[in-house]
Image 1 (cartoon, chains in turn blue, yellow):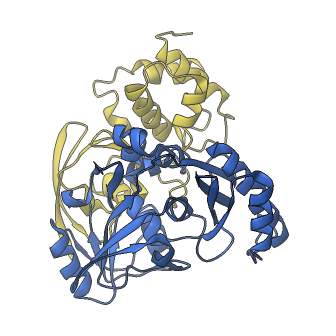
Image 2 (spheres, rainbow over the protein chains, first blue to last red):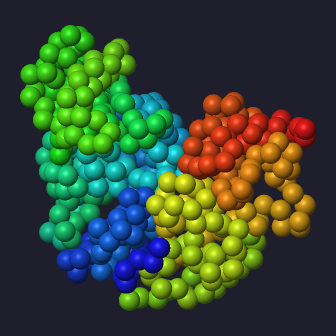
Length: 266
Length: 157
C-alpha cells in the first residue's frame, strides 16, 4: 500500500522529539507502528510528519526502584515478557503481554504505544488502571506525571496532547497485592471482546474493565467473587454492541470476567 | 515529502538506496532490492506473509517504513539458504508437505527459523504460538507443525 506523502524524522533524544512534535500540529509519534502504520494505510490518520521514536535509547528499558517498575515508553512487549525485573516485581505485566496478538507484533509493539493509542480493546489501559500506574508526559513546558484514571480521556484520546510525548510508565510496588487477568478474545490472543484486570490488596479488589466504555471502568469491591460481580452489575455499564458481541453479552462478560480476574489473582 | 538514505545489510549483502519517506519496508525489499521472496498478503499486519528478520527479530515488513530500517541487518527467505542448499527446516517443509500453494511459506519459514533460534526443542504448543502471526489458507497447519517439529528433532521423514 502506498501511504500518503509524509515527512519522516528520526530524533535521537526526547527533547528533539518534543521539538519536532510541537513544530507541526499534524505531527505524530511513531512507536512500534503496529496500529499507526495500518491507520495510515487506510487514511484514517494522515500525519504530515512522522516522528520515529525508535532510536531514542532513553525511552527504552526497565528499572526497579523500591519494588516499583519504571518502564520506558518504547519498551516492547517482548522486552517486558523477557524481563527478569518484571518477573520479580509485577509478573502480571508479562503474563498479559504474552497474550497480545503474535510474536511479530510483540517484537515491535510497545507499552507506550498501547496506552497512548487507547483503543478500548487494548490490553494495557485496564491493566494500568487496575495496578494504579503513573504515566510521565513530557512537553515543551516541562514534565508532569498523571495517574491512570486521569490519563485515559476517551477513545484514542489520552492526556498526551499534541506536541507531547509519553516517556515512562511507573507501576507501583506489588507489596502484598495479588494481580489477575481474564479476557474473552476473538480467537486465541485476538482482539478483546471484554478484558478485565484485577489487583487485590487487604481484602479489597480493584478491578478495571476494558472494551465496555471509552476508557477502562474501575470498580472496587470486597475481594470475593459474588461481591465483585454485584459491584460490576451496579456500575451500570453501557457497552457498545458490534458484530462480535451484543451490549447485553458484554455486560454479562464484564461480570463473569471480573470474578475470574479476582480468582486469577488469588 | 522527504527522501532518506537507507543503508541495510540484507542476507549478508549491503545495499544503499534513497527512498521516499512513505515507502513501506516490504516494497523496498521487493521492488527496490528485487528480493521478491518476501510476499505481500493482507497488507494489514495480520497474515505474516511479509515476515522478515530485522536485527534477528521476526517482524512484519508491511508494518514498518523502509526509512526505519536504516542501519539494520535483514534476513529474508532468500537468505536462509544462500548457497542453494536448503536448511533442515526447508527440507522438512518439503518432506512433510508443509505447504500447498506456497504463498505463506516465506513468512512461515522466517517465523519458524526465529522460533527455533530461541526455542530449539519447542513443544507443539510453542510451535503453534510461534506461527500464530502467520496465516495459511491451504494446509490447516497440521503439516506445518509437523515439519517444524521434525526440523527441531533433526529428523527427515
